[in-house]
Length: 415
Image (cartoon, rainbow, N blue to C red; front, side, top):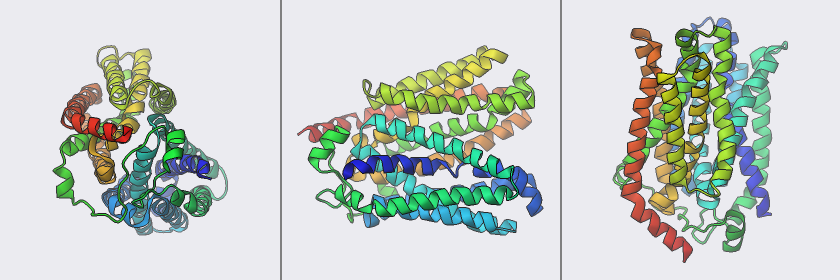
């Protein structure tokens, strides 16, 4: 029966991606009906992000109290309720109200699932699972686009995705015995030793459910915690900045038409999705640290292409390279967390990593927007290079600070 759990986790990662692109796809049709300025999408997005940051920071407490299976099921149910709330909203303030559970449902499940996979499965599953997230993030806007061509409009789009979330919620609640079947001696979600060796290929010392929850001050005091937070901040800042501004760069700096730029900007996301599929195979041979360094090198190559060879054809190649380079970084940083910090503290550290990620996502793209409006959008490669350099040094400091500890964890696991 425990063989069924991994496909369910794959479905859960698709579910994580489904709601992410809905607001951007639906907003051009939504804001005239609410008689709101187009910029008000930023308010909703910020509320969602703040809820996600808060629930990410609470993930350690929730997971210890409820277990990963229940946190996942309840969080997806909360997101489904928020999507249906969006679909029946008639005023802007109602959207803001429903944005609260929308964000709260995303953060804790993201941190809990990522930690679970990091503890129980090898790195290639983490890469492929995040590839599934990319499929979900791509599918959501397509569902919304289909709904917008019908009579129901964006209301139907939110209901359709909400219905998908409800189906997954039911599957997750029925699967709760499978999660319990993987609980270790301390009550945390863990496979029995035989299944763990066979299915995940690795054993880790597992955290105690109901154990003491670390405070933020204690987490910040862990060697390497600040470095991994900054590393994650930089990665998500870089990814989100490219995702938001690639189209504008191609249009205003490279000379593509607005329609061409909008289409070609998707090359970056295609690079990430395809790259994560390929990364799953590469992680069979290379470890997480090597994959992160490889990804950073490929990102650097893409940035250099934009910086020095940013003509029309090569600009597209630059963004594809950046997407391919981004592919292994996010999943491999998460997967390496138990090795750097120990399984007992991994959920707490992943929670603050996720919070740092959302801060980077919220803060850094608007900062570049100010630079682009006051100076030039052509500064995008320089901006990305600065973030990449900081990310590189933070990751190298993390490896140096936690290298001996990671080795000790691996040694303990092999006993």
